[in-house]
Amino acid sequence: MLRLATKFKPEPAAFETAVRAGFRHAELWTDATLLMQGKSLAALARQYPLGYAVHFPNRLEQPPEVLQAAVELYQALQAHALVLHASHYLRHGEALLRLDPHLQLAVENHRIDSLESWAEAYPGLALDIEHLWMYGPPQRSLGELLALLRVFFFHYGSKVLHIHLPGYLPGQPEHRPMYCSRDLVMGVWDLLAERRFEGLVVSEVNPEYQNEKELRMDVLLFELWQERRSG
Image (tube, rainbow, N blue to C red; front, side, top):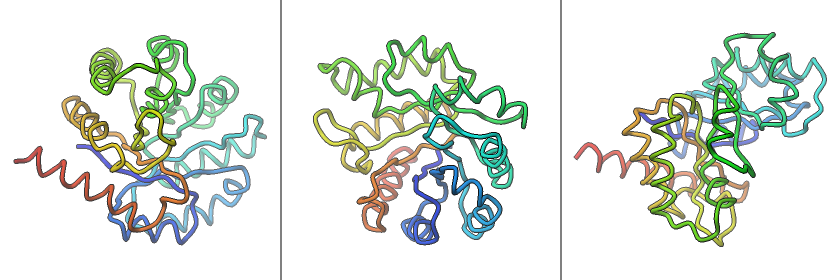
């Protein structure tokens, strides 16, 4: 049921690398310039056997034509979700939904005061598990994090449309490949499998890891987990 994805700036080499590494889904990073080339970007993306989510531009102020272009790219790719930060949802959410009332808007957590208040505030969620561990209590163990997630999924799992899951460990740099934190990643996959989660689970890594070798390691880890579950 889980769908493993990578995330990248939509350039031809990045698509090629993702497919060669074994990914079948991707989240596309965008900015205003890219979105204004939406027709050619959609044509490029459709050349590859990938399912997509789209990440809304990170700059808060965006003109109406960028919102229109984001919706058109989402529609052209039949994307699973349009991921955006809370401030962007508050500024642009109503306008985006006027353009397409059926958009799956997934609001990402960053530095939040309360997991529950964040989950209650938005109709659709993009749960960034690295952010949750990184910005939570510094003494929180992996076991405590997984226990928190189990309770969270029980109460709010129906709202979760999208997952960011880099291979994070406390004290280590962010946005590393999944295989850098196997116990975290496989533990989260187990929880998501129990919930029959059908969204994308994204190995969100920095550009230095976006090469075939590093990405392939994450695909192999996912395949190993699938074998263990089926066995």
